[in-house]
Each structure stands twice: as structure tokens, then as C-alpha cells.
Image (cartoon, rainbow, N blue to C red; front, top):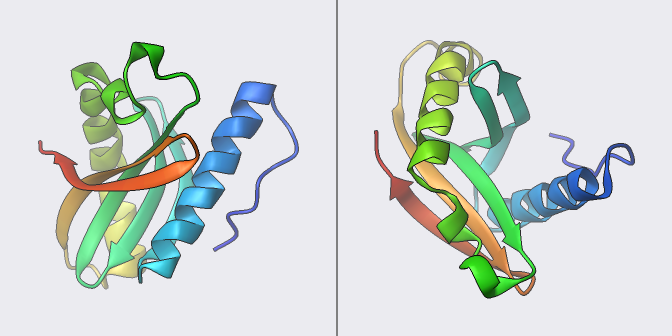
Length: 128
């Protein structure tokens, strides 16, 4: 899976893509296989879809350089969680077909939060 940072977009978008690429490398170092990057639909966007054993992971990547408004993980509020859940439901059938031989696996929502450039992997960050 190519998780290189695209050179296009606004500075904020480039920063976000760079954080997603760093998160993907971090997760891969911990045995997670990245299946898809930046899955977008009308409902929203999933930063990373991944596989850890028999689990399908939907991963939100957040980065905060200024902790004045809380840490990076704090920005995944209920509204954002609802969008992630709707988006995951949209992409679930395709991911199941492509990567799980048609058998729906257990799914989990994780967050990789970067505060001061240090990754923190929050497993099972929220539930549907």
C-alpha cells in the first residue's frame, strides 16, 4: 500500500497527509497491514483502513501542534465519531469482499494521535 505523502493540496492538507503516512508506518511496525488510505464518500472520510489479524480497523489520524484546545485525540468528538461510523458502514462491504473473502470480521475504531510529534495508538477508541 502506497502511503507516501502527496505533494498537492493546502499546507494543512499536506500536513494531514504527512501525519497519515507517519501513522501508517507506525502501525505497520506494530504488525498492522494497511488496506486503504483516505476512503471518501458523502458521509465522510476514513483516514486508514487496516487489518490486524482477523480484525478490520478503521483508523482516524489526528495531529495537534498546539495543545491549547486539548490533545489530538480530544478532537475526535461525538460528531466526528458519528461521521466515521457512517463512512465505515459505507465501505464495509467493499473491504470485506476485497480483504476478508466475503466474511465480515469484527471491526474496531482506533485513533492514532500525534501530540508533539509522538504517536499514541488508542485502540477501540469508541464504539458504535
